[in-house]
Length: 267
Image (cartoon, rainbow, N blue to C red; front, side, top):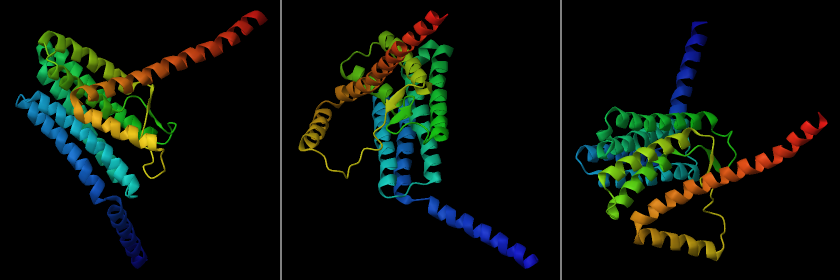
């Protein structure tokens, strides 16, 4: 009896150790750690007054964040540990870091309203991550429900870089612009608006020659004027999703109007 109980305890410990070894992979978690490091460094840069540097580092964190999941899927090293670690890293790099950056740059002059706006962005980002983890697999493929938090953080960073590059960083204008942007992005993160996902884009499948040319052209254009193009990419991505959502609402209203008229006529 005691020997059987001891055997069961040993087998449970063995299974836990095996699951743990299977669940932790080096390469994707290194990339996740780099994203976390960039988020932490962005906070440090903000505390030292290097706001544009902090914005660039958040953009770099988004690059690492985009790589870790793709590398994990390509190398078949996805794990529950990696998912949780990635979410915690995203909260720091794309929730806390841009909120601290915005507050340190201009929102501090609004006092309580300023830091509450920064907190709202951080809280909505955390809820967006929690919803993503709980609804993973239930959202139609190729789409996100709500604006992804890396894109929201990237939009804040790209806006700061864009305005600084063109010397449009007047304190009054920048303050109200960032305040409105943060509230808008916070709402989009917790909304049910669908945003396109490129996670399922297959790099191994054959593509037309024109597609390769367009991809190279985009890389060249972004490299030539990153301060402008990153901002434009963010505006196009968010704007296209909002336009698709408005078209969807229009189509749904047109479909429901005949049904409503038929019901009224039957009365």
